[in-house]
Image (cartoon, rainbow, N blue to C red):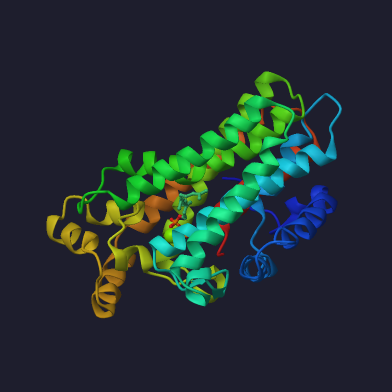
Length: 324
Ligand code: FPP
Ligand code: MG
């Protein structure tokens, strides 16, 4: 892997678009129910990493045709709202109390409010997508939501058993990588990029998303809560087996049974964290994330040598070296 560059340098080429996007995000609740307005303020004043809109803006620069800034902003906002809606719903499913270092919507209000806030955000996302000028990009947004739902349903209906490596990869491709791919591929399509470049950006997005989710799953086991912005050990507490756990417990049926047991008490979580951190599971999972990083970066080699290509490389470096 190449040396990681300075964190966040990849935002520079698209700073103006990101600032406009942030302005629009905090206004998403304008004119709506007061509870939705308050939830929107709550969600968008604690800033996320905005990786997905950054990918939309960077990927759109590979288009050869006229690039309408409004259209690209619409796609970026739509996909960021899909992402936020899915996290609001996911926090209900996970009974999560903290995200981005602030209380979740379900913890601040309750599950019923969070459910409807998520629906509201998703409807806003689709309203933005519906006016995009290319039906194939509108369809892509809908397909991405199907994929997120399939991934999440796969997770919540999974049998209480250690999944295979391939079942894990299938799940994270659906619930995470599909959205990264849509950001890159959708933006390139909207900007009339060369079909070969659209495909390369889609491949980059998929591999980047896989690297991101594996790293997220590693941080859930070894991260610092303050940096990570959410509780550590939650996957383990709920019996949600991720790649480092699969590697740590494979071939050890008694450890596997303890890992996948739902609703563990804190002492059992601490003991299992100690065992998994001492195993080679975390290192092997990080290696896999680096493999997807490298494949993502190789896909970029087929793109024109624009500054945005360097920025996409920096995004890939950040995704595997991040602590938050
Ligand atoms: C976070 O993963 C969750 C997702 C990436 C997808 C969640 C999808 C849904 C709830 C389907 C509904 C979608 C819409 C658009 C309404 P994680 O639990 O591994 O990460 P975390 O630690 O950040 O919670
Ligand atoms: Mg979750």
